[in-house]
Image 1: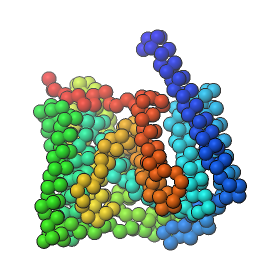
Image 2 (image 1 turned 135 degrees about the horizontal axis):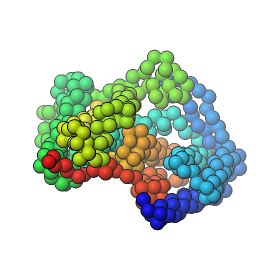
Image 3 (image 1 turned 180 degrees about the vertical axis):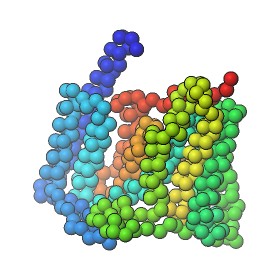
Length: 420
């Protein structure tokens, strides 16, 4: 890189650092002005910490003092960001600031009332399950160089098939397995179009999504909507499974060790995919194919085979995410029930910089917004639910726009490879 380019890059990074510092200071000022000064002296917020049959004393905090302390933390981090920045820890600090601001907002919104934090965190994790699985589907595909826009379609197909087969066989596990298989089949179609016939990958993904939306809507109306076949849309749901001893740990137990099978599978798959991608020879081959397929081919790596396999693995992940909507959440299939979450999963993948753990963190942001909207509506909080729902999208726009830094996809992402 030339000296001029390095100078420009440093200047841009300095500008981004200053912008972030100003944003942190504005958050601190807003918290004091809107939350602390609008709260009557002596008001308290009670955070419930009990759940899952595990009783823990509630935590009552003074609203004004708590908000001022949290605002001071934001102001301190903003000052440090302005003066010298945080370097590679910028993302961590950004996460801390977002978490502090959310906590201040919750403290203000629930003043004079009780908010069960265990239930809120549990709901957040549950709502992030399909987003995390969809984001990891994108990670597996795009790390190998194939763009997967069809996650939404795979979600729908998996949800429909899981409900239909689970109802027909009376087995939730067969329904789940069927959803995974359907996701793999749609991924195979995407791989054939993108790899063998070199169709534009975005167009191929959109076509598969439209097909899945159309076919599931048609079959839902013609079959599941018929009173004679309504029994085919009643598979039931996976119930909460409590892990002995671990489920009795205060606060942590009800959140992580009293959940349905999808949550446990999600955590296991996050670890497996991360280790497989970054700690195994297979992962090295996949990343090589996605970064420089020509060089990978010269050292004997089967580029097309690795791309096929990674895309199909990603489809299986998306099919599992689709099954969550019917077998892990609602217990039936409804037309268009995924509501665009496949595309939100793509945003989580980019936000997470094409890593499983990063994608999970981004999915938690969207899951928290969804959980907050419903919880605060029940509390009758004065904060508009639309504002809370908008917050994670604004954060995503800031990241994509380059406030923190530009997320770099795999170099060969979306580029077909022709073996010479």
